[in-house]
Length: 322
Ligand code: AKB
Image 1: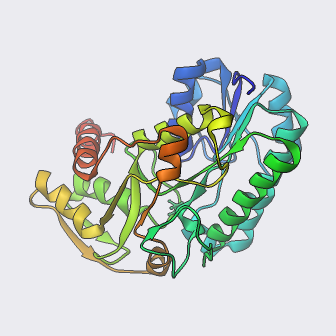
Image 2: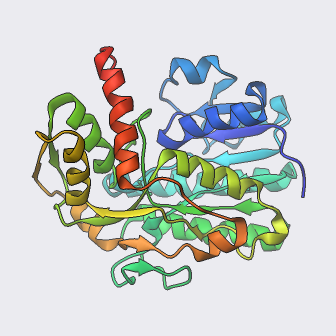
C-alpha cells in the first residue's frame, strides 16, 4: 500500500469537505492538504490554514494543474450535487457527479495515486429497500443523485479491478454539523432545526414528523472517512460501497431531544417535494461489514449530539456570529 503524503480535497468548501480538510491538515500537515472548491468563497479558517485553489472537477486541466503543482498522491473527492438540488437540475447532477468522478478516477490512474476516496450515500437505495438497509441488496434509487451514487460506486469498483486503483468509498447517512451548512440535500432539516432552535426557538420542517432516516454527527463522519482512507487494503473485502450507520431517528425524536435542553422549542410541519425523497430512503443501515473490515464504531447518539450542537451554536449566537 502506497503512503499518503499530499492530499487534494475536492468540494472542500462544502459541509463535510470544510471540516474534513481541517482534520486532515491536523493529521497530515497543513501544507500537505490542498483544499479546492468551484465557486463558493472558503471560510477564513480554511483559506488561512493551508493552500486553497478554485478548480472545476469537470475541467481535467484545472485538476491536473493542482496534482502536478503539489505532487498529489491522494484525492478525497467530496465535490457533489446533493439530492434536492439534483432533482431541480438532474443534468447538472449527472455532469458533476458522474463526469467529475470519472475525471478524478482517470487522474488517479494516470498519476498512480496511493488512494482515491469517493464517498457515496444512503441515496443509493429506493422504495422497497428493507427498513434496515442490508449491505448487499438491489439498488433502485428514484433521484438523479442516487442514480449517480450507484453508478459512481460501480465505476470506482471497476477502476479497482481494471487498473488496480486503490479507490474507497462509504455510504454517508445525513450528516449533522455545526460549522458549515449543508447545501441542497434532503437531510438538511436535521441541521437547520438546531440553528432555528438557537435563533428563534421555532422551526418549520419540510418533512413530516414521523420521517425516520439514518443520521450521523460530524465527528463520527470525519472518523469514518479517515479510518476507511487509512485502513490496510488487504482488510477491505469491498471497496466503494461501505454502509456506515450511527443513529436513526424521526423528526419528532429530534425535536424531543432539543426540547430536553430548550423546553420552549416548537416545530411545525410543511412537507414539500423532499418528503418523497426521504420516504424512498431506508430508516437505518446494517454496517457490520464496515465494523468487521476496518473497525467502524461511532461515538455519538442523538442526545449527546444535541448537547454538543446546541452548546456550539449557542456560543456562536451569543457572540453575534450566527
Ligand atoms: C442528501 O440529503 O442529499 C445528502 C445525502 C443523504 O447524501 N445529505
